[in-house]
Image (cartoon, rainbow, N blue to C red; front, side):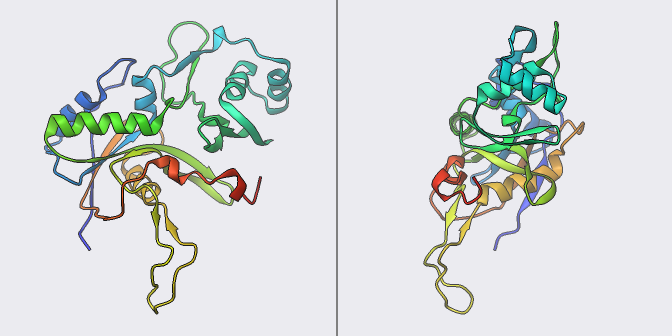
Length: 254
């Protein structure tokens, strides 16, 4: 086993649409006295990816439907915000306690379909919300390509978001996008400590790495939207974060 270290990337400025994330990360690495090496993994907060890609919706341009108004009354939420959730969701899984648990069009089951108002500037007018990236795995792959080329290395990239869990209190970091790492490692058929064959074991490697990075990145006003993980090694083939999404047919609770 190799020792694994985690490094917060301090000093990344507030990201605006069109910003060069790879360039900002490169500058932050330099400012923090770090140089990329092969096998490093960069974990980025979903928000800075969405911001750079301009994934904003202005609420004053949203006309809520009757269904959105009905849900907004029930939940005590802005009906325009609810309409954006409905626009991004393929299915409403559960509604209650001021939150909508929705299956996002990407397959992610999460609160409010990932629509967020926190840690964003709301601009002029009547406010805006931030959506998830259109293609998180594609965004991670593009960032990896730039970082590899700029720094002469081969790195992994994880796009990290905060998820609640239905049977546990609190949120943890999970990977919604990944490139250059084995996001899911299949150990079916491997032997356990006593030689018994594993039948169902899969390791959500990208989620475990995202959660570890979240300890440094924080969830509120910390202002640390990126972290570097060094020393993690796994010889399993690279797989995107979409491999972590459980197929609807295997979902025992929907």
